Length: 347
Image (cartoon, rainbow, N blue to C red; front, side, top):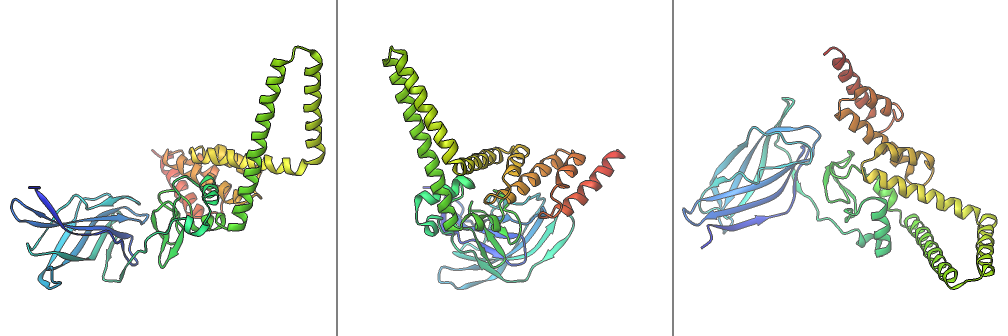
C-alpha cells in the first residue's frame, strides 16, 4: 500500500486581485499509515518586491460539499521569495480528517521592505493559455514568430484584467516586463501583426532558397572543375559567375540591401538570445527603423545596464541607461544607480 493517497487536486490558477500572488496548485493528501489529512499549496510571487511572509485561511469541505466548522489558518514564515519564484508546495497544512475539498483565502503578505498588505479582496481564476497556432493557423508563421522571439514562445500573449499572460507561459502583473523572458506585451503584439509576420516569413524563405540555390550552383561548379582538365572550362565558369554577380549588382540592389538588413537583424537577435546585450544593441542600432528593431535596441541597452547594475558597476550602468532615458522605468533605475554609486564612493 502506498503511504500517501491524493484525494483532491486543482491546477486552476487563482489570482488574488491587487496582490502579487497566484495560487497555482492546491492538493489534499491522506497519510495511509496514520490517517492524517493535509493540504499542499503552490503559490508564485509575480510582483517586483520580495515576499518574506504570507498568511492564509483554508475553508475545508466534506465530499458532499458540507462545510466544516473550523477555518484553518496557516502562515508561511522566513521566506525570501523573489519575482517569479514559487513557495509553499513542500509545506503540509494539517486539515480535519474528513476534508475532501478546500477553498484558500489570502489574508496577509509581508514584504522584505517591511510593508504589510492586508488582503480581503476579490480573486479570480486565470484562463487557460491558447497555443499560438490557434492565432497564426500556419506552422510556418509559428516558426517565424519563434525565430523572432524565442523557441519557448508557445502561447498567445494576452491582457486579462490585471494580468499580462506571456507567450512563454509566465503570468505577470499588467504593464510590467515578463519576469521569465523579459518581453513586454506591446512588443509581442507588434510582432504578431499577421500580414507583416507573413511578409517577413516570405522574405526569409526567399533568402534561404537563394542561399540553397547558391550552394547547389557552387557544388555543381566544383564538380565541373574536378571533371574539367582544360583551362577553357574554368574560364567559362568564372565568366558565368561574373555575369551573375553583375546582374545582381545592377538589377537587384534594393533586394540585396533588404537582405543585408535581415542578416543584421538575425545576427542581433542571436546576440540578444545569448545574453550579449551590448553586441545586440550595436547591431540593432544599425537598423532601428526595421520592424521591432527600435524596441529591441532599447531592450538590449536596458538589459545591458541591468547586468552592469547587478555587477555593482553603477557608473557603467548609468552610462548605458543614459542612452535611453525615456524607456520603461529607466528614470527610476538611473536614480537608484546614482544612489548606489554615491554610497560606493564613500565605502
